[in-house]
Image (cartoon, rainbow over all chains, first blue to last red; front, side, top):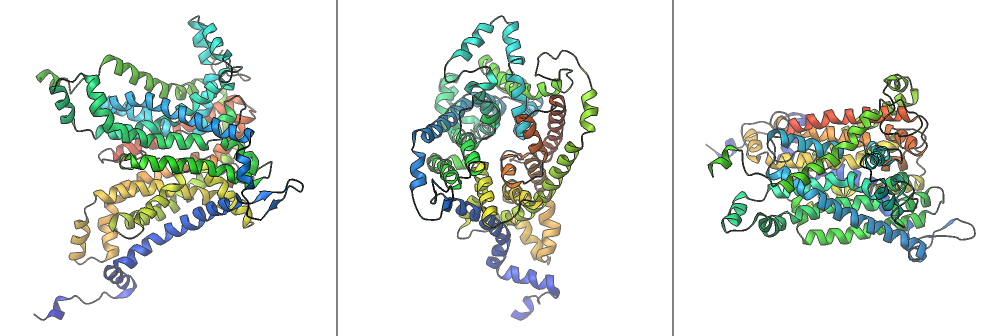
Length: 314
Length: 274
């Protein structure tokens, strides 16, 4: 049999022809597959992002209130004025507290869900995480508005237990307290914690599920107390999951502007400043400079997380 | 030894159980409370326990035209954004999982970026781009924003499934004489179908619920979350808001259950990567 006969003839028609071309030139095929998404994200998303970053190098004229299209770092300098810097520090520390608290709350849930829960319990754990994760963000905030209200269920529970003075004492703490829970820092913190918690649970659960059981058995065989096993075997292996979860909780808290607006004591967060500066105040350069802050913080954070191997746990 | 096996594996310690149960209660109770409030007779405050129960607010909410128009807009936006995201996300996932090429990491980073960076950044950059280019706010500006962050959901689901789909199936199909389109239709699509369905549903849910980006890309139109936000900031009729909130929780519940059953056999349950 000659060599030519072993090679099938080309297909006819438009689709056949296309199919043959793609088979012969896989690089072209991959390129065409990528093109639509790359164009969309490249133009719509990156394009807008760069346009925004560009504007942070402009500044607003103090007298006319118009944007001056000249390169300057003046707007960035404004970020370091005390009133603006306070906002950055407040937002970053809230994000850090929410991240730490959600890790503490998430670890037991994720651990039990991954290691002990079977069948029905597994489904319940799944629902308990997925329902808050996928429920409407605003509905969750609204639910907390109901829970934290002065006439709401928390006040009622404290009354029933006859420990209302404890609640009043907590609310009387300067800075973090307030008129009622829904107008206090504690309230803002609780809502943040609730809303981002599932993002922490899922990666930890995935990481714990991947810990080989024989490692845990080996640790127990060698005489380690369960706590020691947790401390020396499970925790180090689950750490990438915690770091992966913290990326979400940290980033999401940094950028949120709706929760502190609805539940809080009126002190501003970065997101709220961005929103008012670009809207009512019309100072787009300052708004853009403020957006750069979370981008830089997240950049550093992601760089650190990558070094800890968090991306393998996503 | 043996009794361990009969009980179905190791047991958690009491402290651990308490911590996990407390966590579950923290996650579920606030959502359940909404259900009670939807029936309250109290109109002016969030009084707990409710002074009385009634179902009249369901009828009141049903008759409100503004809720219906917001709901319709949300469904339309979500449907079109999901369709766009399905096309773009699947193609991109096929390219990234099927081959190694220069810049592959960059592409996967680019896809994840809209969801990794806070939504407010996506929102304000789109808004400033619209104002730079003099694009008026419309239905399509909302879709533009939504499709951008929906791509990643479809992409994540599709990539996970493509990785588990053996490449030899595709090669076998080609060896048996099928062309690329036939292979796609008869081999690839049945394999990735449920992943796309799950990804599509999650993208729909994400878009249906989105508020942060939408506040920047919507003009006068109100999607359902924007309506809800308006009610949260300037409450007009609290019991109606309660009813809508309950409705939204119920609507979310069903797709989650469906996504669970569609993908539970896989190693990657859908929704893990919202």
